[in-house]
Length: 425
Image 1: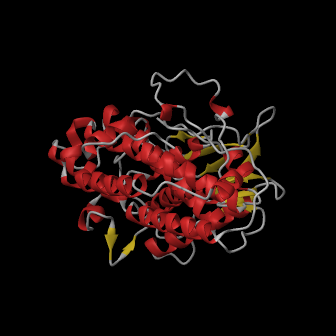
Image 2: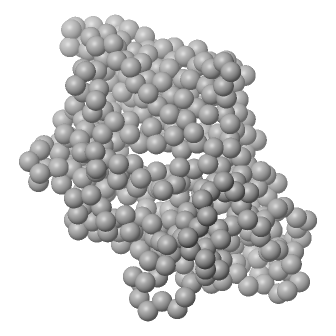
């Protein structure tokens, strides 16, 4: 456990936790540990999260306090900070895991240093808690005891509250950034400057990582049997073609609804049916859905601008296994006119959009209208930068090439080597 001195204030407690380094994990670690989850494994995972999440939350609260352009003082960011502070207090105040000695030896043996952090620079802090640790090696576990069931049940309820509390974070931050950009003399859609963009990259990557850890623990703790080949939310045999087809169907439906089309542009998928590897299907679906929405929008608007005839050119999705690497490339190619050279420099900037942004400003600050989170075709200026973060989370990337006047190629790079550590900062 992180060694916590008796703090005289929340500020001191936050500073203490923020002084510890964050411990990155890899997909390989999560699969190896979560496979055949037993009471002991689940309890040790809970212990790791009870230590790690307050550290990550404290880092983000410190980032908000030191945010670019003093955004932390704005009402929207103050609300987000309050959410992070509530979650920090709730998890850091969770009772220390205490079990009878006989049970303790079975379920919580002494942990060993995380071997994946062996190349990290020596820590400056030399306190008892500064030696970050990971899960202990799997041991023979007994059955669930009443104490363990009650303990894990209470911890899961805390995690559920935390995850639900932070659901609207992306929309709330987007609203705050738009307000700042408008007050700075722009229209809210001109995009963040480099300092603010880098700050948002760190903030959102941390959000991706915390939601992944929380969702993974909740999934391996579930009493329901997991879907085939799943370890928590990770599918050891993620079928790339299947995930991409789901994203194609969803994006096509949104397109038809938005433009009142009889049929959206045809999307041709070329992917080896047998291509499978360990990945988080939800992450891949999110990335592909956003890219496909952009291609559909560009294709429809270019075609309808020239004629009322709904004869749209095809969009191609080609999946290629890159030779001599552990990577695959998913290339989405459209004939939607491409991206202008000046715009291409800005498309990765948060809040940059070439689409009118009246809709988002008419919503409330949580991105809600009519009680549901909307999935518009465009307008927020967050789809591409957030999708790139999801791709980079496990060592991949997202790249764009524009053929001005013709179309755009968006390439998703996925890393099949599941040993890449999270890029936590």
